[in-house]
Amino acid sequence: MAAGPSLTERRKQATLLEIAEAAAELFAARETKDVTVEAIAGAAGVSIRTFYRYFQTKEEAVTPLLAIGARGWQTAIAESSAADLRGAIGEAITATLNLDSDEDRQALERTRGLLRATMQDQRLAAVWRRVNGESEERLRDLIAARKPDADPFAVRLLAAAATDAIRVTFEHWAAVDDASVVDPVTRAATAFDQLSAGIDGL
Amino acid sequence: MAAGPSLTERRKQATLLEIAEAAAELFAARETKDVTVEAIAGAAGVSIRTFYRYFQTKEEAVTPLLAIGARGWQTAIAESSAADLRGAIGEAITATLNLDSDEDRQALERTRGLLRATMQDQRLAAVWRRVNGESEERLRDLIAARKPDADPFAVRLLAAAATDAIRVTFEHWAAVDDASVVDPVTRAATAFDQLSAGIDGL
DNA sequence: TGCCTATCTGGCACATCGTGCCATCTAGGC
DNA sequence: GCCTAGATGGCACGATGTGCCAGATAGGCA
Image (cartoon, rainbow over all chains, first blue to last red; front, side):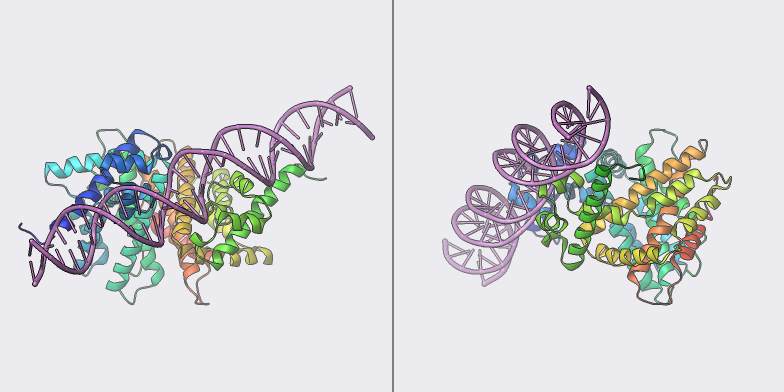
């Protein structure tokens, strides 16, 4: 075997993704409340007990799919050394959301379907909100770490602006069928510029 | 009897608030998962079955307390006839959050305690996010109704900016002990100005 | 005043949820 | 080839959320 992670570790990761994709497929077909954990576990080929070792609730199971990308652009900000914070965030958004390979584009299109189901189901919407909320919290810590003397309220506001720029962009992108939709990457970057333009002290 | 609502209707409202306050008190004392529906129902003087006629889950029980005010400033926007939409939203925020009576101030201080417990508990945080998310949705519809020809994406962004200005203000206000904290009303209005300053087309 | 109906309430049953506990099996080091 | 750590599965159990039915009460009508 070549790389670092052991066989056991890779199996665990594969099982986690299998469960997540099984859950996403079932949630796309029926209402969340009509999908039992037993069904998800069965579709993923694991026992109920094992399901609960990977996720706390059945709704949580789609978190890995919804959170794809979030980690990426946040570490990009953390590693960026640009002096201009707003510029750094804007660049991180553009760099991370930009998709070069066809594989990436396919993954994004699957995410679009999941996001549509997510926005129409109370329970899944709660997961989407949690993912974004936690993303905002991490971003807040990142900004505070880079600007220790900044006004804490301005830090909160900037973190909210960045998170919302991406969140609203994705929600709109998932909701609209129009083929002439502006490229999500450009739109998210523009939205962040608009929201953050008036924030002073950063 | 004087006013419109019947005795039955007023009793229901009283029961709902009793449950909500009993839940808030218990949640402030212990972790959410260590509070059973049986305990809340008992503290509120109703049966478990009746509890579930008022709320779907135990966490939901605090929704009426967290959503106080949200309805207020949204109807203020709906009824406002100002041509300038951003100005109307800013005025609605100021007018609704402004507290004249001592009673209002006491209620706000209780909300502060509840909000602190809310931000430190996963389950309650989810309720807070849902309340804000639904508030954003309603605001989005309000804006779209007032500006039918506006760019749908700009509408989403403006609704998000207004909701976040208030949400972040309250979260910061609840988190900080400092007595010199800027008045929440002024701060929310300023935050909305900052976030919405760069949004074009509205 | 006395009845009637709508509905609010409570108790019971039941499927499902989420977790603690223990037995079994497999990966990977010796 | 053996041995230990950890992943998995089965079982039990308290808690959750809802359908169903019966008793109690508000408020309209004769």
